[in-house]
Amino acid sequence: MSPFKKPPQNRPAINPLSRRQLLGASATGAATIAGAGALLAASPAPAAPRAADRSRRRLGPPGSSGVRLRWLGNNGWEIRFGDPDKPTTLLIDPWITRFHTGTYTPRGADPATPITVDTDLIDSLQLRADQILVTHGHYDHLPDIPHIAASTGATVLGTETHANLLTALGAPQDQLSVVHGGELLQFDGYTIQVIPSLHSMTGPRKKVPFPGTRPGTPPPRPRVISELVEGGTLAYLVTIGDRLSILDHGAANYDARQLTGLAPDVLLLQPGGASVPDYVPHLMDVLDHPPYVIPTHWDDFDYPLTDPARDWGGLTALEQAVRAASPTTRFIRLDHLESFTP
Ligand SMILES: [Zn+2]
Image 1 (spheres, rainbow, N blue to C red):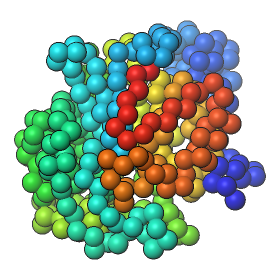
Image 2 (spheres, helix red, strand yellow):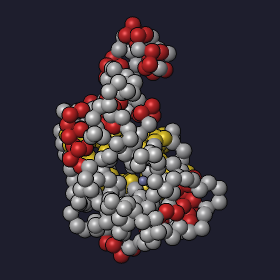
Image 3 (spheres, rainbow, N blue to C red):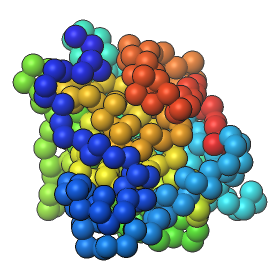
Image 4 (cartoon, helix red, strand yellow):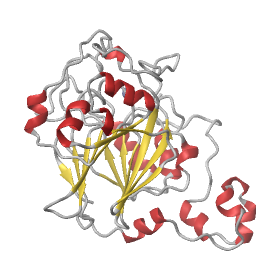
């Protein structure tokens, strides 16, 4: 069965009203939708539009946002905006090195694969960063961050486990900021909202690959990929002024309760999600049908970033699911190192 096919009778409870409808609902209407919770229950007057709602309404034609997204392969993203001479740059999960693990072969990733970092390759991209956002601790997200943090001076956001793994890999400790999910951080002209999220669960027992946490004292330096444990998964909503908001989960799963009320302009979306009922349509409903979906984490990273991206097999189904669930959404497919300005 297609992972996106609706299972009969067990569709999770979804708020039947879109967020726009919710925000415009009258007090009478609000009283009938008890599931809407505190947003409306506490206030008899129509709720005021939130920042995300305003930003979506102001979203202009493609190319007008002044925000450039560049795909660094896997779940790596560069978000750049502001003064062209002194832009602000955020990186999500930048992993440039990419070594052979067999992740997308029938045997799966070899847990004993050594962790390597190609500093020459990373440096050739001349990355800049003000913040680096870590979604989780796995080998296809974390290993290059110590070098990138050291060379850019960026602040790195992640859980205690991510910070401990990064410390063990040699990251500058004073640049690491431990977050839990729930933070809303104000920067100059933009915010970063840290959102509790979930990792994808695979196989017949539905298990997180390389699970676990490393709280407290940092562990010994990880040498092989199985030592880079998940350490919790975070999503991030980056909102740039009133121009644009971007959401990335880092893995093919999400906690819908944490997403209610968000209306990102751009959703960076992973293929897969076979363990999540209605993975794509539920997400599109909860997020009120983002104007843009850009696929992420869809390339086989056994092949280098300097090659064109090779679909590991989930991209077509993802695009079909997005188009079916959200016909007004633009599905923007980028190749390695390509950029897009919404
Ligand atoms: Zn992962």
